Length: 382
Image (cartoon, rainbow, N blue to C red; front, side, top):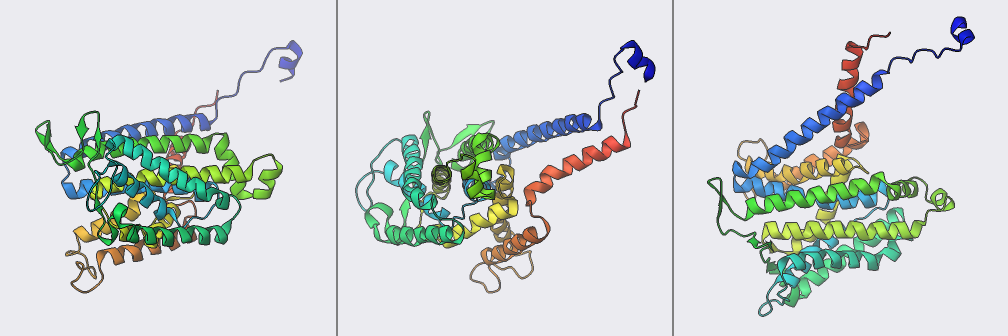
């Protein structure tokens, strides 16, 4: 060391730490996993029947809505119990804009793609009208205020029969985009008949990918840092120059638009909208999705939405083979009721033992495996 300092020669660079190799290995594994998952999702319509495709579409719609709610509640700390209201605005807005006028319900007869865009915008406008309240309330007070939206929405859906069809609901016009109609008119691809579910599958994947990437960009950029500052300490964020009321109102509008898009996709899958679906139970399910998946995480919202939306479908499909679960109307525990018990227990378990949600398991496991491999095969020091 003294000789080196005396001669002025530069010391040799230290060998790289294990962190670089761990990050490289982790990045490769995530890339391979993402590529394999994408290929699998693209191939599923060629092999799955209609039941599973519809279940997957419900999961995609739920994931879009959950991402929006996670931006609001998980990232910004605004409790919302009225998310189902904005889903209803999107679903019924699409039906009104795309439906043909006449008896028994009214419609404007617009092109379906334009009707979907307008329905999402109307959901955003509805969120914008509520945003002054959202920008000034917090905690339980905001939750109670948003809960009022559910009761207002249910009253309108049941009584505005000319637009909503009342308790019986109304049919949903098929989506049409670039000359392709997403209905049950048969389209053969590689000797596989494609109906409405197969066609909507790829539309749902595209919408979910776009919504996820946009939300991820928001959370990783300057708006995301401001939202997290508001969530962690609202007063301190204001002192640092963050326009708290403006951000909270803007996030509420963005979350409402996500919910509106989810409502449009749900309507296209159901092919009929009914008011009973858009009740307080649906809002509670969305809260369960983001808690189970992980607050403030896009991947966590997708994982939680998949878990909560697929669980009743799976229990219904295999109710004959499961203990204590029976088909609806035959006695015992109905699949939907059993699903609520299970994801209610999952919420408690996540809060107690896994605060980061199921999404944190996906993030932590590759890191631990890569670190363990780096420890077993350390780099040779020069």
